[in-house]
Image (cartoon, rainbow, N blue to C red; front, side, top):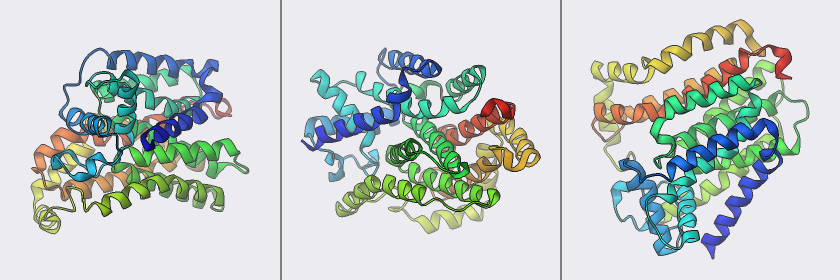
Length: 361
């Protein structure tokens, strides 16, 4: 019963976010894009280790155990049992529709779950050609991870959507109820995708606070209520994780020893800078972002993107410095995925700022 209630609630959330826009002409691009990704996702099983051994594995356990908390017995400790079960629960619900489990059709959940975020993002990119550029960049940077069961693209899009709504509400004199509702739901989804979602939500919130200072406006109580409400499902999950005695791979390792050892290593800094700052997308996106931000100042969305991206990169520095895994291996296998929120937000900001102001109204 609990699983059924969750599925109904999630579908209701998606419909509330998407319904008023889904069939409009301007959003047909998002719908067609998601349908295309869904068909590709259904074409083959996932070859990706994380997708099969974390998200699909947790979904399979929920399906067979009929419990959202199946992973909290800490079986298969390598599968990050502390991760929220939101996406795996949706995968399990798809399997329930078909009546059996395999590793193919449940992963269609990930591209389908991108639709609400895209319905928030694309209308806020003024020109059709710029929307198409954003989707091309998403495909170029996300690659196979859009359809192979990884959740990083979903996380990144949810972050971009949440940031845009926070920025929009902060800039508005009287935000509408629909904006607050969309913010609550997109922020809740962002926080529930994986552990990094909470950090990204904090980064978007900090950027919003910077926006209030730059625009010399007060913090809106409605936004505070929305963000606090969005965190309630994550809080409930974390309480369950704590009650089960689980911890993440960082907390369960020699955290201080790992950090202190790498802080004294010049090679660690060079690897981090090379992997996070000197990657091609970073070098392409950062210079124009800085130029536009400081040239247009408060009229530029890029100005507010900088603190969000900078804060999250700082979080990544701290996480990689404290990883219990081999340092070089961890960077080489995950940096392209963990930087996706930064790259997509920077892309979106540039596309908006490159559009003449009168076309953004």
